[in-house]
Image (tube, rainbow, N blue to C red; front, side, top):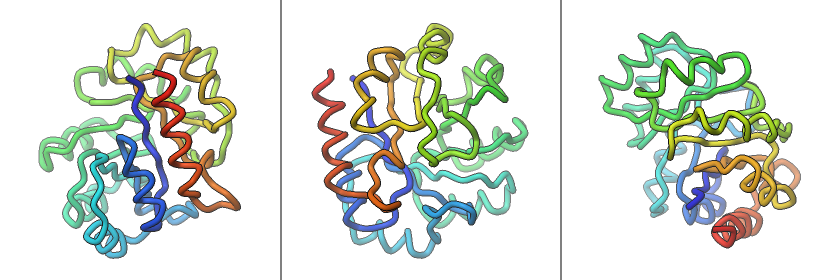
Length: 205
């Protein structure tokens, strides 16, 4: 079964819809992103909204102090550092907090796939580290390297929407699809689009 991760959630309405998927991503300590939210606000949002989806902290920071602040304030299931980070720091974070890892892979660090295969729960293949802009990934390339990704661990992102989701699943055969801009209207998450793309992925199974 292909799972669904909706990333960049900021409102209760979009959280309720995204919570019907498998993972919900919250962007933190990333001021340049329009989807960035403050930790205190997120804590209140989660306190008043019951979801079954796993919670993923998404950040570009590689500062261990800032990462510790994120994981101390909110009970996340996973962390996704959308940047190149020293492996020893990542291992320290994983051990200290008992947190699971979404490890971001782009063409810049493609060979980390082999080094990290026993350390990351998921490998997220994005079109670049500056994600969330709707730039479509290279599905042909990802389909070719699928055989090198451990079963159950392949996440794909990059310009996924209602129009291409079926093609992405067919060509790449991912374990998880990660969607952000593809469920937005005028730059804001649309609960209707979120629920519909989750349903469409479920129907593809």
